[in-house]
Length: 114
Length: 255
Image 1 (tube, rainbow over the protein chains, first blue to last red):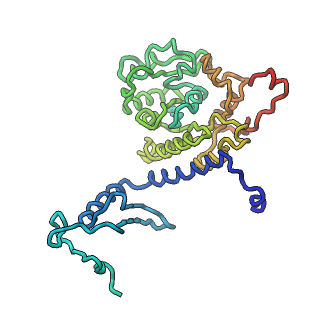
Image 2 (cartoon, rainbow over the protein chains, first blue to last red; image 1 turned 60 degrees about the vertical axis):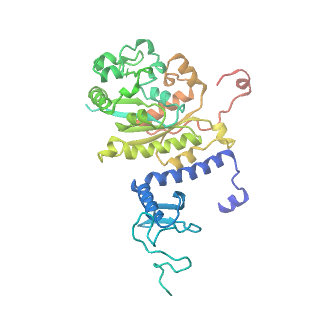
Image 3 (cartoon, each protein chain N blue to C red; image 1 turned 120 degrees about the vertical axis):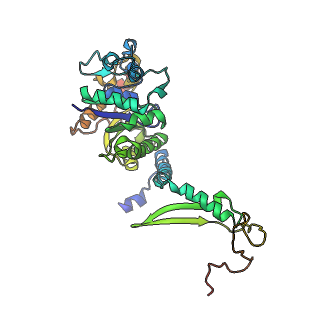
């Protein structure tokens, strides 16, 4: 069968393209439909918190609930590369909450020294 | 007696919901035109919900079938009057006197369509082998599983069936149309029937006769098969091959 497929590859007819487009669109839509309702709120709150310390735009944070085997995986991607540290007065975050100021170039406090 | 509510739904418009609903007999909406009873409408669904008319004053008996009644919904009045409670109350009343209540659904995935599908016991998803129709069907299937009454009350899920309409074997052969297998695989719901694209459907709607009454028409016969399958009969799928037309029919015949 595989040999046959190699000899006669499926023609790229418009129907084949339609099927592929549908599969991609639906995979995306089904994933967002099955996502729990709290994800957008979580994303917004994370954005607020992180935004107190670094300049960040809403498109720089992505929250996904994935699944691998029987484990649910909450995946949070925050892109801060190139994001400027927010200028703050006396080391505190802009809204006056206490925060540890990270000097540029210094290791982040959550990274264990090797 | 407790009748079953069957909703014909699709998301996308123009895919053949009303034609299919007429084929599945009795209903709400444009059915009065398809069934040819438009001049007999006096009271409609909204009158009954508002208590201006009794249910039996609004039901119109079909001329061809003694056990078939049409329950029209006004096309001109504000359909927001069709609130969920009211619709539910009327459906409960209908369930007492009828075995099957076939609901045609408005197009779209908003208020009207959601109200129509909310009370469904079974849903027939009318889909065309075409990208936007399959996509909308997928959304409707998702909503039936999460937003219907059966889903909300943790009852047995709505029975979902695929009715693939306006299927053209010839275009599938040329690779211009999604195949039955493609649509089945993508939507993964059981296939109830395939209705071939047929000129007889427009002829039937022009004259106000449901296409099932056209014994000559492949579409009509395919609907007959689909209804029989819905009622549990095993029937082979027909009209899936491009029609072979003789030279003379190609010259003089009509489809």
